[in-house]
Length: 230
Image (cartoon, rainbow, N blue to C red; front, side, top):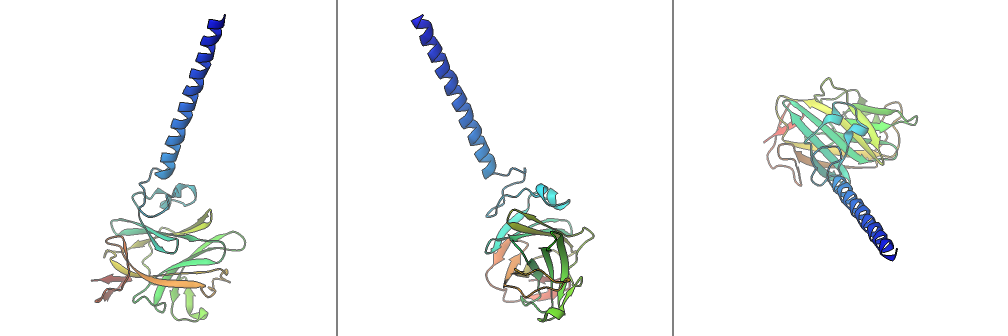
C-alpha cells in the first residue's frame, strides 16, 4: 500500500510539472505575439504595432507593409504606396479638440492644404480638408485645398488614447522631400471653423526613403501637386 501511495504521489507531481511547462510555453508564445504583430502585419520600426482592422474602415484596415516613422512627440506617420496611390495614416495622442497634418510649399502655414480630424461633442468622427489661405481663422477654408485626394473617403477614428487620420493621395509624380505641418488644438472646431492650435511644428519628410529630415534641402523646386522635386 505504501508503494502504491508513493507511485500516486510521483504521478501527481509529474502531471503538475507537465501542466506548468505547458502554461509557461503558452505564455512565451503570447509574449512573442505581443512583441510581434498580432494583426499579421510586419513590425513597423520605431512605431507601435497597430491592428487597423479593429477601428479603421477599408481600405485602410487592409494596409500591409506600411512604412512608419515617429515624426513629432508621439505622432507617428505611416504610409504605403501602390502605383500612383499613396495611403497616409497619421496617429497622435488625443482627448478632445482637433489634430491636423498639412502639406506646405515652404514649411509655412499660409498657402498650405491640410487634413484635419476630430471627434465632436456628440461623439461623431469628422475629417475635412482645409485650405490655409491666411493666418486668421476666417482665412482657413473648409472643403478647399490643393491635396490630390482620390475618390476613397478619408477616415478618422480613435483607438484608446490616440486618434488616427487616414486618407489617400493620387499623384502621377512620386512624393519625395515634402514639407509637412503638424498641429493640434484641445478645443473643438465650431461649425467647421478651427480653433487656434495649441502647438505646431514643421518638418520635411522624405517619402522616397521613409526618413524625417532635420533640415530643409538647400535647393528646391516646386511642382504642382504639393511636392518637392530635387
